Image (cartoon, rainbow, N blue to C red):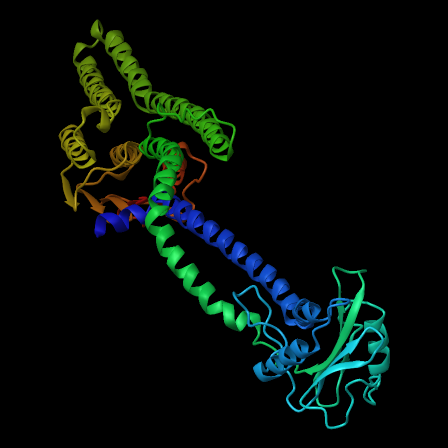
Length: 498
């Protein structure tokens, strides 16, 4: 279950599920459109079927024509057929299938008369109390009845022109009986009244349950039969897309570790290809910026070493030269007076040797030794303590490895702090503390030396300014606390990204 959840929560799983659902829904939508089209066609057909008067004309015409053939009229047979028709209660046959129109009910109590082509009554039901048989037919006193009879006697077959709506809601019809098809000889006319059936229920109310059932059944069939094909199609189609995105993610992971050798190789011209090209350009620019930064750092280190050599070794060498020159001038005239100058020269040479050893040690970055920041700082502090003859206490909390640029920056900050202590503080104790947290690392270097007024410290000097810039380059800060006669505390705080 967890494996399936992980798959469908991934981009490839979502694309696969989308392809599957789209395939099934499109097929269902096409089926629904087909069903709606069928219902619409059925509705049109049904609308024609509701006007069943045309069937009445056809059925009565076909049956009565047998008894009204010229020269062979069968009036008894005609009357017997008319009796049977009235007894059946319908003027047309019952529907044989769902395409047939409904049968037209005869209005009971209303007479049915069969007329000759001249309008004389030949047969009548029910009975003939008025003695109409053999007499000319008189249409009922109903608006449009006489005109409908005239049209029937003229041989017209348009059922709308032969039908009159009665006050009771029925339809009075004058049905012409022809020898053959339209335009053939008129054999007679049948006058009757049929009922108008109640309107059928709305088509949608009869059809929608069946449509819903069909859609549900076919939906299940499509899910079982078509969904695997949709899933296979989605799985195959999304493979290339996810592989391209994974390549971009792998390149981004490598860049986050400082390795810009891995570059996306997507050469397509779609959005992902354009994104890969932009990321590639960005990586190349970052590489250039890092190279520039390394060159600037090297130049900064050279400037710092030049300043320290100028402030220490060069000055000490000049002072040694002066002492040696003074001793040489006194060797012949006063050898005893030359001895103190030689001793001072020896002391200056020893100091220069220590300063050179310290600077040489500073030239070996901690990360190049592969021992980590804490071990490298501890080793450097011990070496510095032996050379400067100042005790150092070192403590570490939650030691762990950091990114290379962070370790090197903190190592250089510690070196600069120790160098300042050796040159200016006259301290008898130095305390170093390295604290690792989840989101930052803190380096603290404190001494008990003479201190200085931190508000009067020069912000433009190379030492403190370069240390502050080194911390700010990594998004960190450098804090300096010092009071005259109470020592100095320097704290560097560098944020760490998760």
